[in-house]
Length: 467
Ligand SMILES: *Cc1c(COP(=O)(O)O)cnc(C)c1O
Image 1 (cartoon, rainbow, N blue to C red):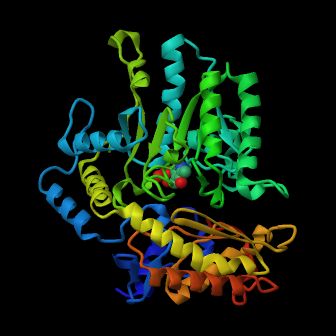
Image 2: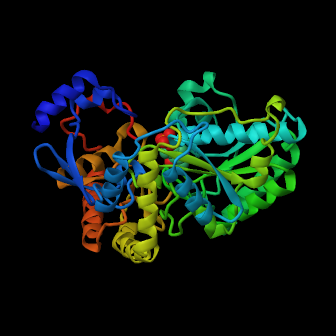
Image 3: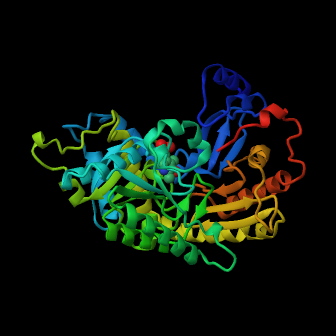
């Protein structure tokens, strides 16, 4: 099977995620035959460095021998069993391990099967908790940060704030209260990241002070708003937000679906602020990028608020068919074991330092306004005007020029609008980091040419967007 053959078959039957399918009239689809470590190999044998960990899921590279072995072993024992009324060793062991490693005080694991569904479960649990403990159906609103992203299902979309994903569906979703983001990129002249964090926390505090009677929870992506363009904030915001939530009797939901499992330098991003959220949502890296799985970790007292005689109807009657899948649990256990054995976080600190050094010269580029980094996530913000930070109009799709250049050179970069970022698997080497940064640098040179460098692309094909 060649690339061309598989592409033709694909385009005849598939509808791809987050894609204007018409783009594929001129933008080649990349059919992957196999993966190994940081590399993906297409059907014609060309390889691509997976600089974005296949949508932030992969932690230790593709086809990792130890995760593969765990899955092969599990496959001959049990693939899946209903988790209501039944249990199995992998899900018990995984729950024990996560509770032991998560921020102190998180004691219970509720399993779901993708990131958005974990968010939905946390929102429902928070609302239901207030109903159970004090019969207060009025505590039903959610507070979200500007530019946040929490998934695509209607409830998750409602607490997100990325216009491109949300606007079309606005008539379908409940409205959330949006407070300013602590995003350090938004610092006024002379303001530091901590200053921005304090300013945003004061705005949050004002909202909670007046509306806390109606509010169930605040939802936050700790340290990095990923889908919103890898915007980063100071951990002080999380400390202040935790304190404000405590003061006004509002839950804090931490969405670490993207930033969990070492991406920010610590196993969980909340650790850098020394806080424990009331609900911690995890997915993506949980299974090392192998299988869909997610979890909501919560405190014992939240669990206890649902624990009563059946007729009280306090139970959390929520489920997904593949909840607690045994194969996914084994992949997750094997992934967590890799964190134990290989001093991953210490090695990542060295890799992150190297990545930061390699990318630093891009700060001087006339169309780069910001090069920011939190642990193993590094982002480069392309702008039309460096002095005013005026962005390139989204219609020009400058990031797409970087994407196309990278594919040609053998790397998978997938810019978010004008933001080029790296979120590589942890098995990447310093040489591979140098290659990745070099490809991005070349891509930025091309993407910032004027007029926007589409050349062969028909004008109609340029309208749309690429996440
Ligand atoms: C990806 C993501 C989600 C949604 O997870 P899915 O598995 O894609 O539904 C939610 N929150 C954050 C922060 C994410 O990055």
